[in-house]
Length: 317
Image 1 (cartoon, rainbow, N blue to C red):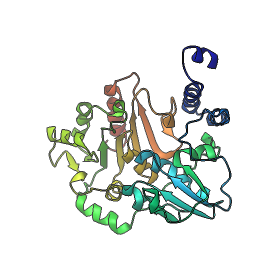
Image 2: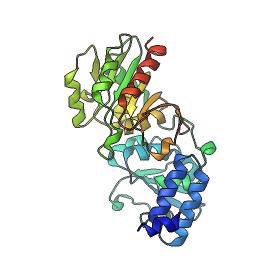
Image 3: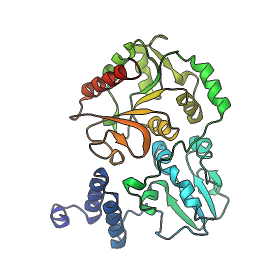
Image 4: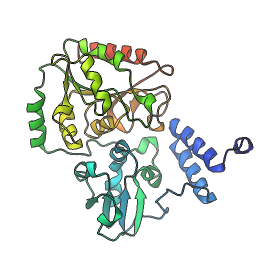
């Protein structure tokens, strides 16, 4: 396969990356790690790799979260595993996530960029998305103990007062993912028909320019806009803990809810990210998550039909 791909002008590294993604989608993580090992041994590995492959024993380790917010939240679960071996664990993360990350067990210090903010000397570094490989994770050994983030009870009670919760099921919704992959964003036109479900009350967790779409259907009786009073991730976390369910596109909020042990129904495009694997309706990363997948590319109608049916059979019957 390598020979054929290279004959078509593809590099060894690019071929290996494609095979890695296929193994991860199939849930064959051990094969993916062997692919990564071979790539690194070849000298063709991505120069953005931080982990040198050596153990963490007795060292001060700097854990960097250089990808998106959702990636940081998903893989920070490994912090206690590093701390079992390391003498000290420092996490360098996005400024907006410092308070959240600080609640994770096993972390001694949390800082942000630039590197000068990290005042403690360290002996080894690793990027957060390298951790599954470092610990040779397979599907059966994914650290899935939730919650691994914690929010102050006072903040949750304050959120409860702001939200004016409904007596029936309270459901958070988020339809637009980041611009990184617009195919993840759910059609708001299709999603909005769910808001007519009488026994449920909906709360928008949408941020960014797509939030303006609420004006097309917005009334206090249909959707409450949490962005009006919850500007930061800690506020969002407190709001999520007051929800019975988050219905979301592939987004930071979905990872945050999963890490807080809030039930999540995740709406996925036909070509979804490797972490959700193939043909699964659940996620071993988040025990309280249920996956709703497009049967063909672009078909959000079928996804919303399935969600609507599940709501009527469960929460909003």
